[in-house]
Length: 395
Picture 1 (cartoon, rainbow, N blue to C red):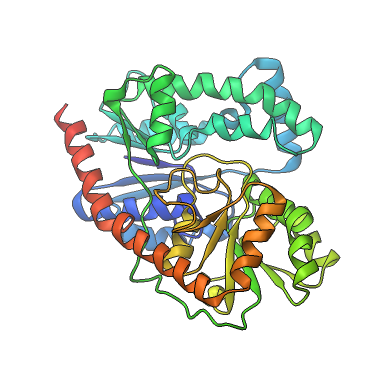
Picture 2 (cartoon, rainbow, N blue to C red):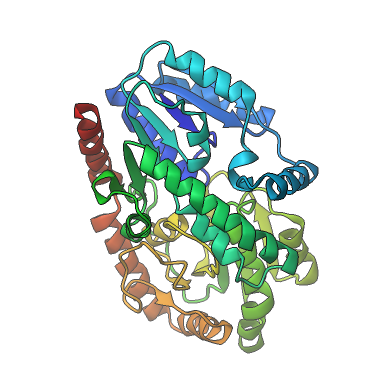
């Protein structure tokens, strides 16, 4: 039984890419029962695509709104329960999980921490928890970031509650997947048995993503990612206000293109303030958006796990500039596979350096492509997953 928080098709975000490829692989080897949340009615047709990999599929609609979030946030403060977990509590999903389990399964695959709350205890079969990120680390970083004071105060309370729940879930599950060895070490250092935690990186389809042509005259700086994910929105707003003006001062013909679904108002407003900034929203094929790009930027200040957008950009042969947080979990060497800078001035200088040298862009893009081909193609990663599942079923 495969429980997932997000409908994994189309695979348009980092977590959806991972979930989709794992689900597709499992469907070729096992009988899979899929239960997923849908955020909007327009997602329902995607289930017909996923049906080719699954024995059965069911879903629950879940609505999120600012008003509902405020109510749940207030409830979280009063009850002491994690807001991140409790906002996805859904009686219909719980009922569907219990109904599915009556049919018998060998393994429950819990995709995302928030879905663990639907697993009964004791569970009728082994449970694998795929903890895409150490979630509390993301919220902890919000508490010390440049976000508004009210958000920082709430985050400073929330991350401790989320850590308590996340560690409980990881200790109770039979096996836990993290994306990076660093996340594995964080869990182990907080009391989760090292014998049950396995790092499994996200892969890239290197046949789908092929290198684009880097032209000498290109002046487009590109980033992409799901803009409903708060760390992504924070990154592009920070870049546009603190870094981009430093670049534009020395290179006035620069353009900044933001690609990603559902940009919030503060992201859409960037284009209204500066005509050289394009907020493209969702696109069907990011390969087309990568054409005519000079530099790919990932100016993240908040995060955990692994940034799939960096791997995709490297597979496209794009030179990457990111932060230390942005490249966490990726086995790259700064200066060889990507440029890494953490202050606005250093970040702007790195982008300007690449804009001024097509040769350097080509060198960096080629090195990044080779890194992805050697370490992050899906075949070896899914073979590791097979070994992990064999161990789980054998136990």
